[in-house]
Length: 96
Image (cartoon, rainbow, N blue to C red; front, side):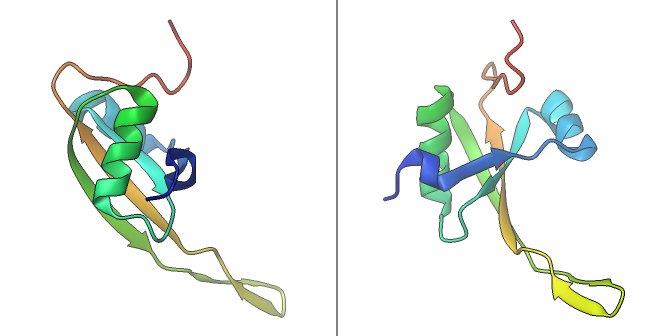
């Protein structure tokens, strides 16, 4: 198993992910492409000291983009939506 900082890359802070966080206690992270659900669960539990109930994984394919005559692709990535147990929470913004 990889180190926890190798599994979790960064939190996803979009309007939709912040709504999920506030209403359903679900947190979204960009994770390593090779990480599986068990590794993601272990990494979140160790890094944030919380209890994880469920991990859902989404593979986001690369999109073709174009700037003038040049075409390219965006990076492919893997997102994990982590559902925490009742009473657990993660402070992503460092507020107290």
